Length: 138
Image 1 (cartoon, rainbow, N blue to C red):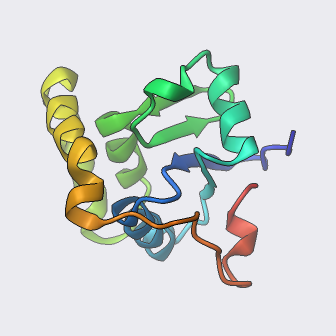
Image 2 (spheres, one colour):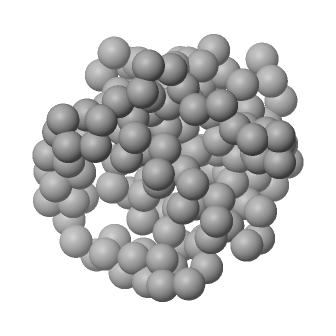
């Protein structure tokens, strides 16, 4: 298995989802402190990280944030925890953590269940540019 870089948080995402790809691009753009590294849920590395946490890969329809040695977060909590580290107005989204997780995840699931229909799907995972390749763990 690939070694997780020290002091980095890992974002696992659906590598064929256009909405997810856009979200990753926004995270990279606003990650001024270079905190995040990325792997698709479809990659071997992503599958290993999911299995290590006892999650069922067949039931995952979600973004996952792994803060090594601390915790992992799924769905809306992962998105809001990611926003906490981003520059600009994105960091204000963390204030939505006060909303009950069941309500946040209900909205998240509605969007996740319709994301391919609304935003489309790629045939294969995104291939990062040479400049971005260091941010991806596959």
